[in-house]
Amino acid sequence: MELLEGKVALIVGIANERSYAWHIAKAMIEHGATCAYTCLPGEKNERRTARAVEALPGGGGQDPLIVPMDAASDPDIDKAISAYEGRFRAMHVLVHSIAFADREFLAPGKFIETPRDAFLSAIDISAYTLLGLTRRSKDLLSKEGGSVMAMSYYGAEKVVPGYNIMGVAKATLEATARYLAGDLGQHGIRVNTISGGYLRTLASSAVGGADKISEQNLDRSPLRRNVEGGDVGNTAVYLASDLSAGVTGENIYVDCGANIVGV
Ligand SMILES: NC(=O)c1ccc[n+]([C@@H]2O[C@H](COP(=O)([O-])OP(=O)(O)OC[C@H]3O[C@@H](n4cnc5c(N)ncnc54)[C@H](O)[C@@H]3O)[C@@H](O)[C@H]2O)c1
Image (cartoon, helix red, strand yellow):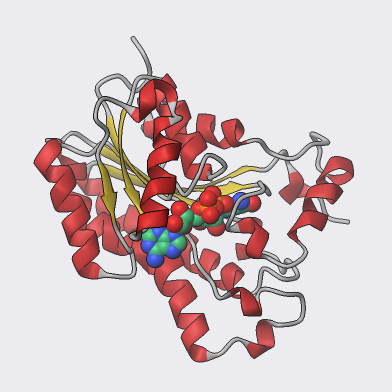
């Protein structure tokens, strides 16, 4: 029997085939899961996500559900989960793999200039949405036991030049996941974060100086390489499966060990 056989996952955050969410969906499908997807509204975004879903094993599933959802909008979250409910009885896995910050303030030395609206929108879209989505999905997740996971980054803990407000948002995301884990464990729902290493994607290319990190990893990370999407995908499968039944409120680094290196 496959690890995720009989499990249904909602994947939030596929923009294209480079997205972390795409690699997570791929690994989950390969281990027997059925996936449903959301995408950012707008013709171009919807087309791009649909193409990426089609490129997943088995075309992402039979007649895959892809629902447009701007996570900054509560009615959109509600509509997306209602569409999921129309199709599936339970939700076993919720993958949160979205983030946003105004790139104007994602450059080394620019954190101090972050205005209130840019600060709040980064935290809203990158962190609050984990709470909003999980709350709306709680009944579905508790039906047969659920695993929620969200993508974080090292900049939540340490100063990474240029990561700036995203670092504050990721710290908020990780703390949000722990508090959700505290509330939801009694309902059979686990909540964890994966702190992924640098992967070249639309989101990471908005961070000034990110390419330098990827070069440094080749010399500095214990495994002497950058992380690949599949590394995170496989960890997501572990978190989605019963192999991690006793794990909640944790942050798991999947970064080739880069976070353990001091100087
Ligand atoms: N790429 C990296 O190096 C890296 C490292 C660690 C963590 N992460 C995290 O992984 C997650 C996925 O990012 P990625 O690198 O795959 O980039 P990506 O650009 O492929 O994915 C980001 C996603 O966020 C979505 N998004 C942005 N605003 C949204 C909104 N208002 N509503 C709904 N969706 C919205 C985009 O549509 C996109 O699908 C993010 O949380 C990111 O911070 C990325």
